[in-house]
Picture 1: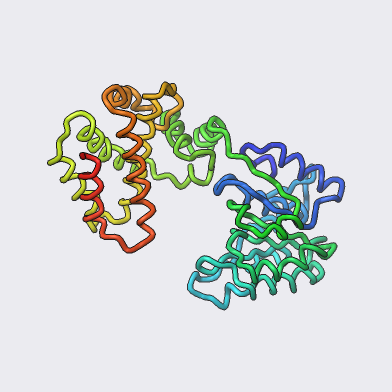
Picture 2 (picture 1 turned 135 degrees about the horizontal axis):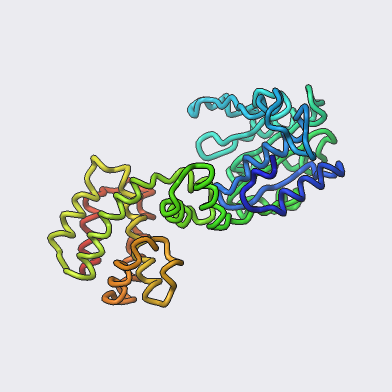
Amino acid sequence: MFDNLIGNEKISEFFRRSIKSGKLPNSLLFSGERGVGKFKFAVDAAKAYLCLAPVDFQACGKCSNCNRASVFNYPKSDNKDAHKEVVFSNHPDLGILIPYNRNILVDAVRDLEKHANFRPFEAKARFLIIDDAEKMNAHASNALLKTLEEPPENSFIFLITSRIDSLLQTIRSRCQIVRFSPIDELEIVKFLVERREFSQKDARLVAKLANGSIGRALETDLAAFLENRDLMLRAVRALIESNDRADLLRLASSLGDPKFKDDFEPRLESFQIILRDIWSLKHGVRTDKIINSDISDNLLKFSEKAESKNLAEWMLQIEELREQLKFNLNKKIASDALFMQMAG
């Protein structure tokens, strides 16, 4: 099943060799951007040991053990007590820790330590995965250190993170780090066309938006993105071509409308991407290298009329507004202020 990993072939080969030789490290840290396949790969590595009929040191993906190991019994998000324990799959030798709100609880780490010291129930090894490992606070991290330093022979602990620098150095130093690279754009296009029946045109746009993450590609609502892009292109046109303040105010009103509150940040992101593409074209970037390459003719015309200084200022203003979304913000007032500030 390692062959199902898109990109990162060297990692697949490393695991195949390690399992074949019986030298897979007991403590591994999977590092890389969110959505590149780290969690799925960690589960597949565990399945290679749990599988009843492995092929070339990989899980078959079909036997009862493989099927059981694929199903996790996740607790309800508001059940704090359930997050104080290892969450097991339907196979008793594969479990994970998941955050409660924004933190992995220290009680959960202690429960993991307890289970790591149990003998495997059915398989020849136990596997315990800590997802979003950067969400361990100092207490939880310290509780894990001893287990990582002296891992039981028949237990493997996989930590998964998209923010490795947020982990304690003492945690990192006790694990062998497996670095997952962003997935090549052409690999994502191939996956979307062959396995998700996307058209080539749609696959290319989604792959550019995914920025190396297959997970992000699969989560992208292309129809919503295109709708938001059309709206934000109106704003770009009003700013660069027509200087139509009345239309900018109408757009600000639509952007800040409470009925579309869930669309607020995606629309700002789309706006920012368009401006970045125009700025890139103005500075000589090839049309096939920008995200919105499917509308490069229109963006080239904007780039000829826009000033670099304005484009840079507008992108910064959008970024500052997106940062403020962490707080309770009046989106209608913020939208009006943004567009009027841009119009000068």
